[in-house]
Amino acid sequence: MIRRSELDRALEYVRRTSVPDDIEAALRRAPDGGRPRQLRVDVFLAAVMLTALRTRTVHLNEVHKTLTEELGDNVQRDLGVFDLTLRQVRYLMKAITKAYDYRAKNPYLGPADLAHRKNSLQAILDKLTGAAGAYLPTNGHYAVDATAIDSHAVPRGTAAQINEPGPHAGEAFGVPAPDAAPRTRYSADPDARWGYRTKTWNNRTDRVFGYNVIAFARIRSEDSTSTTPPQLVDRIAVVPANQTGVHETIELIDTFDTNRPVRELVVDRGFSGADMCNFRGPLRERNVDITLDLRSSDHGASPHPDGYLIIDGDPYCPSIPTELRTLHSTEDIKAKKPKKDATPEEAAAWQERMMNREQFVQPIERRKAYRLERKGKASNGKGVRYTCPAKVGKIVCEGCPLSMNLQNDDRGLEEIAPPPSYGADNVSAPRKVCNSSVTIPYAVLGKFSQKHTFGTDQWRRSYARRTLVEQTFGHLKGNKGMLKRAWTLQMGEATISLLLGIVFAAYNLATLLRWAKDNSWTADPLTRIVVPVGGILDPDPGTGASTGAPPPGAGPPGTP
Image (cartoon, rainbow, N blue to C red; front, side, top):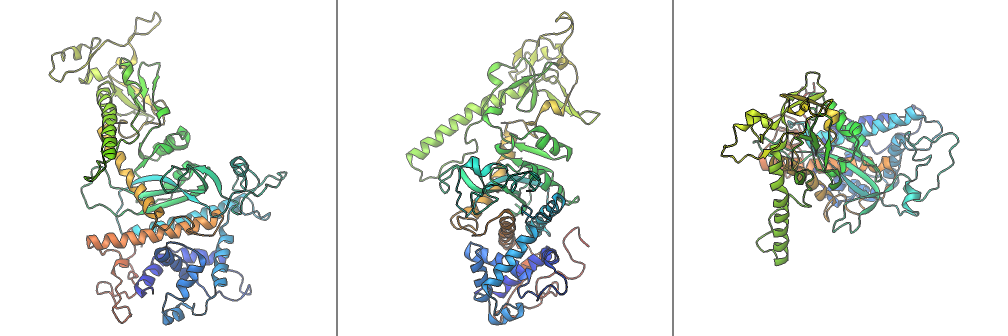
């Protein structure tokens, strides 16, 4: 049986999001459009959340069971679901999907109508996932990652056939061209696609037929010394599995409140392949710092006419040794030390990883001396000013008299020859990189430019925070998670998106309550709902609220 306190928490959670009101407005018909529904939207959403927490699935028959068998008779009568049928639950789910399906083949819906549906559905997902942190401060630092979600449908065709763009999947929100031929249907799920995912013990394969979920998980700032915040997911977006979600990631950043903006993203190699104009450029326009990993094909030196080299997103002196220009990171640079009872094979593998790590870290530390020293942003705001490393005492250069005084420095600075000169006779003028200051545009620094120099200690500590979003996916997709195989039998991108939003909301609520209990935190009224043995809610002594709802004028921070 589900306790009344659990039901009240779930109901209060979905009500504070205002999502039930939005969906009811979308479903509302004319006064003479039919009899009223017995199942309210807020009750349905709360039931799906409770079902996800109770059974680790969101099957509609389990949702019906939650409403008709797991609640007391008096509670069922209060909610109006005492004689609810499974058909009514399915009807409401279908009605919601029909109202928000932006890939529907409807000749009466134009691109603007479908775009409105897409934006409305995304707004619902934002409200569902963001409500858990309404009473928590945020530092604007997030780890972003994508994870694959299997479709319940069985693909009946090759990847090329299924992923082929067609009228139903068209580029303009699914709107076909007037003369487009009908697209062959290769699966019961018309929106699912073949894509790539990381092969794990559970997956057993690197291919997936379904969708990708992009999640923004809260992480601590680098200099934070306060209590570790709960691992909440503030935003999600759902795309077919053959899409990366880079465009949706930028769009999600714009959905955050201006009083609580995104300040930093920590992402993996999946985002390093995005074009400059699609990812790194928009992030810089929004003043968002980034920490990202690079693929092996991303490393290397790119010379510039002004004399410097761009290596992994940072400018370097052209006299840098050749062996320091292309350094590949190890496969598992953040590997943890094995347990005490580890097998000899595990211990040997650990030693091998440590050796590989040292072979990467030592050259990275040596290369730092050749990096141009940053002086600040350019006056026009379109680049960064740098100075020669010899002028700030990082290396000894024969072409810099100031640095020659450091030859006897006990730091053991490396000595280099001056960079080749250039000019009309290729001799007369020094290179700009040897000037006291050189301005490098952001476009020249490239898409790999980031907060810390790649591979350094600061970069490794910053990038290690990304494991929090991986832990979140592990909790949700593990053997006891809410997104394991066959977590739902529903199909279609709109339906899957809505159910994923509810599942992440349930995860956020459970995470928030667990963290609040461990840290004795009661700022959120949801953490103060207490049910005595008699089963009747007592008013909270602090607020006087009996259902966990905040009193008038005590809304989340930043609201009236």
